[in-house]
Amino acid sequence: MPSRTPPRYNTIQALLSPMDDDDEAMNCSSCDEDDACTTSPESSSPLSSATSPDRSTRAILARLKTGQDVCVVVDHGHVNWVASYMQYGFDSNSIFRTIVPVRPTSTPWTQDELNYVQAIQRCIKDGHVRVPYGRCTATFIAERLHTTRERVHRYLKLVPSPSSVDGATASALAELKELRSYFLSTLERSVLSVMANVGLDQSWVVAIKY
Image 1: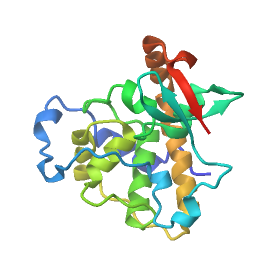
Image 2 (image 1 turned 90 degrees about the vertical axis):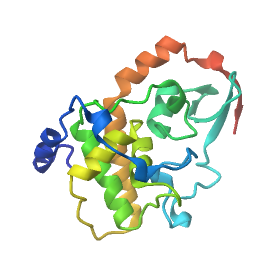
Image 3 (image 1 turned 45 degrees about the vertical axis):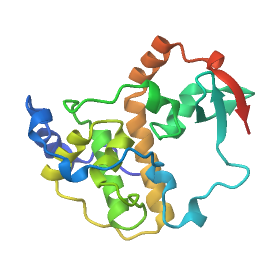
Image 4 (image 1 turned 135 degrees about the horizontal axis):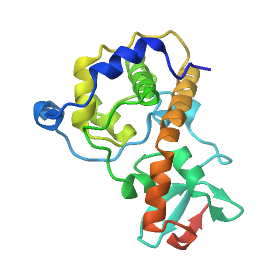
């Protein structure tokens, strides 16, 4: 199991301390592209046969009263929204990408977030995860973190890319999934607050598609 708080990242947190002019200082024009949705790195491995769900693990869709179809976790015929958040995070097929505000550029970096970002970078560098054609790395990572592209762009500019790690795709993606879970857990309290504010419950669900 990977360590959640490697000491070597402490200086990174200091380096990335929010600055008053962050939103103005970072020019991300080189990252301009369309806003097409992408899936999470955990399901974007080039080795599709190793990551494609079989019939028993295929995602369950819920049709919401808003007309949106989202991936959910279902327990005894009811949507488990907390489990759905932990499973799908801020993916394009998750309700939480829609209802939770994007985290601003001034958001401080947490240790679990740094660990997750560097795992994404390693997986991209080592060929375990693909950045979709026409998209830039900053946008791709920002979507995973549900934060601004400017914030990630500053990170990529200031922090050296992590070294490659020899290993199989399956083990790399397993580590990525674990670190993603740690990161999502750090935001769970704020997500629960949003759920309460918008009244997200079973009444939102019109139908469940197995």
